[in-house]
Amino acid sequence: MRAIATVSGFEALNAALKTSLIIRQRSALTYLHYSHQLASMCLYFNCLPCELSQAQIDEYLVYILGRTQGKSVTVYKQVIFALKYYFRHVVRLPVPILPEVIQRYGLPVVLSKAECKRLFSAPIYLKHRIVLSLIYSAGLRISEAVKLKISDIDFDRFTLMVRDGKGAKDRCLPLSKVIAQGLVKYMAEFKPQNWLFNSNKIGKPYSTRSIQSVMQQSITKAGIDKPKASVHTLRHSFATHLLENGVNIVTVQALMGHSKIETTLVYLQLLSRDTQSVKSPLDSLYGR
Image (cartoon, rainbow, N blue to C red; front, side):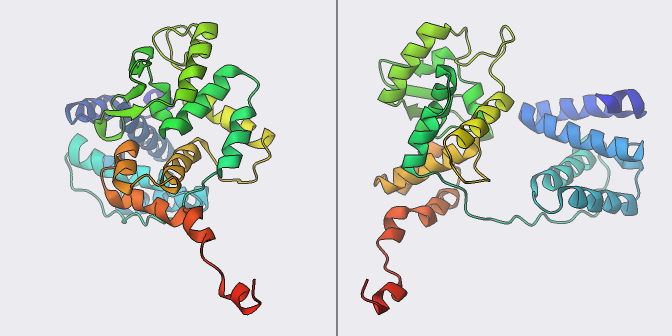
């Protein structure tokens, strides 16, 4: 990490941050996000955050907003959360004045069932077809997919176990019979070790970046014109299609691993079953 080599005191900051997050049982991903954002800020000013004035912190937040051009709130939110955590739990100093993050809740992108079938047929390699199909079939987060182990698949009970998901929660999911057949073929051909999806590096799981690349290539090949579609779109599509198939909202909440039902309720706005049954008043005017 460049900040360790160039910013005095950052190595100690980073070590203290990691220890604090471990003690509070926060995820490794939270550490990576906070460490990266604090390192970027330290490199920008060539000093530690606790040495900055309020004006300098405000200057950096304006810089971050300008860099992302307001297109994504994620980085901005990570910077603010990292600073709050750093001041409260690492250096234990008064937290500077930081803005509330305004979260804009747009509706998620969802693929139609026909688009999903085209997508899963697009990859050349069996491994790529299986990983995309599996994520959709169980509504997995990409971070959950790469952490799956062979032992998490129960072919006798047709279940799939997600361990240490978001919020450090485990959940047991139904294993699609179609996917079960595909996994048997995939495992016979690729002979994965420990991880269900191995990377080219021995002993390492498949990377999220590799799956994202496979997804984007498959979207293009399948002729799907949805620029904002991503691997997470498969999870959104899973929830929406379950609701369209008549599965009740509480069951979908459990399968998705949502803590709050409000998070799941968003998908009700995407149901084609309901919107297609509504006739536009313009059609009524002309008897269509």
